[in-house]
Image (cartoon, rainbow, N blue to C red; front, side, top):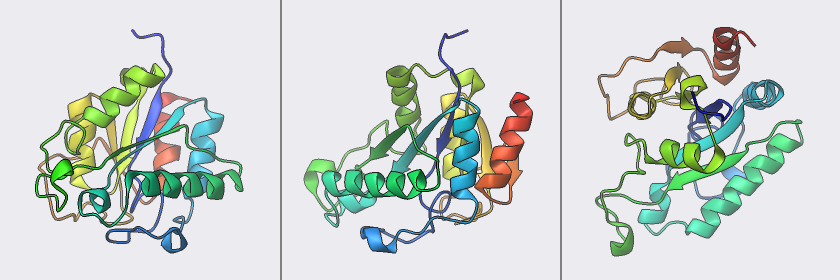
Length: 190
């Protein structure tokens, strides 16, 4: 078994913050009810909290990678005001049909591929056998399964009714991220 500690990999839009298509303005970012408390529970349990999110706004030329990073810094500031924090952010700027040619690639980091989770595990010494992926889409569930972690579907955002509709039932289902936190911590017996 790896020496690392477990992590919770979280989708961003529709899981932590309100789902806004092609979100690119910090002022449009709103925490979902219970999200800060859920992340605070994960923090308190000693789990690493890692956001893994596709960001087609970069591939479409709507935002730069720097602007996405600034959005993540703003999100962490919002959470820190509620005594919670995200340990790391990983995002995929690519899209196979990108407007910007430099981002028009089929990559291993774009969900449902597991690249972001596997990269985070290597960089942050994460034990995948003690980790979970939580998100609002079947794409998130397939990403988690491919990475070898447990999956928790939240009924916020797309609530599993996403346009991709992968045949990948979750290991657990939760009303929102706070409910997911309680389920996962109970599962880990923490």
